[in-house]
Image: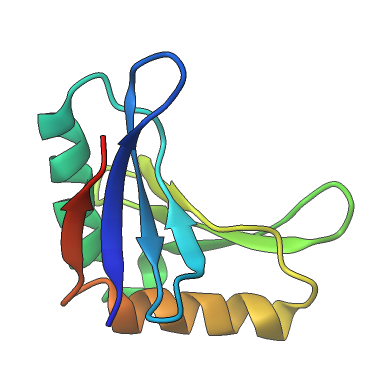
Amino acid sequence: MGKFEIKTDKSGQFRFNLKAGNGQVILSSEAYTTKAACENGIESVKKNSQDDSKFDRKTAKDGSPYFNLKASNGQVIGASEMYSSTAAMENGIASVKKNAPGATTEDIS
């Protein structure tokens, strides 16, 4: 089962990572100024991860595929790592879809 981890970065802002059951990070958030906003971001991921149209498939300058998950308002709520292939990226999207809805939240901030 997946889990969200809330942590603080060097500047004191809140971020979350969605981790798959194997502990691998499959989605990372932007920075939030408050923990409440970060928790709202997690809820948004849980909701929007079930809509394939919210996944924005991209290619980095070096050719690596990656994706962003967007909220209903078009704002990016999570970004993936860089993948070695499009197939690996699609597996990452499938993992977010599978893990996000029932994921628990662990606060390590």
